[in-house]
Length: 252
View 1 (spheres, one colour):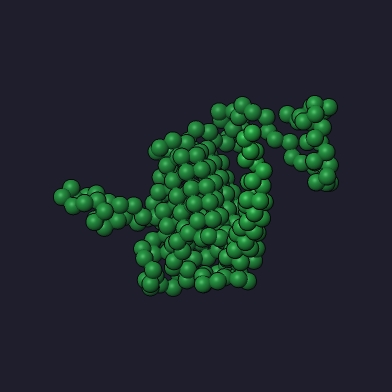
View 2 (cartoon, rainbow, N blue to C red):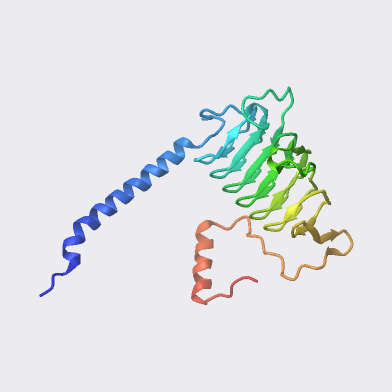
């Protein structure tokens, strides 16, 4: 009669569970200890870092911190690169090079490369793997490899309240206004007006706000219904369960 393999594997399953829980607890502890905040900056010495701001662990490449300003309550995801200058150890002068306003969110794996002035306005949210740079390769001399030619640099300004979707790229010289939406994968250059939606490579305006006519072209989906201020988390969970069971209609 063949033996049941599970009979002999149960100790290894038990140990695997124990080790797995230990690894997860240990990794949680490492992430907490490795996070960078104003109170616990670790090896990083930013020009300024506001209260409530947190750089998740593990951090990406970070250098030129003396010329990097981080506002209050910023959320910097894992493996985010923040650099000021072309390489570490340069003297970039008395003024800041890279500034993040209050409440800026940079998603996992994003890069902000500031060889000259880069400003990201308050409450701007970036999805994962967004790339913002003030430097680009030049190819003026056809006889030289592109990577060996001196790059071009231009300041970048991103206004407050913007949303940059996953994989968006903001090129040198870009100037985004207030509350601009950049679609995922878009490549932005030049000036973008306030309250615009841009998409494509190169990015073009696909929707904009008119004070008299509203969004043009009109938004096809209804606006989300805000959650009432006085509702509790328990009530939200209860409503979600009722909607799943089909006993109430989900809000439209």
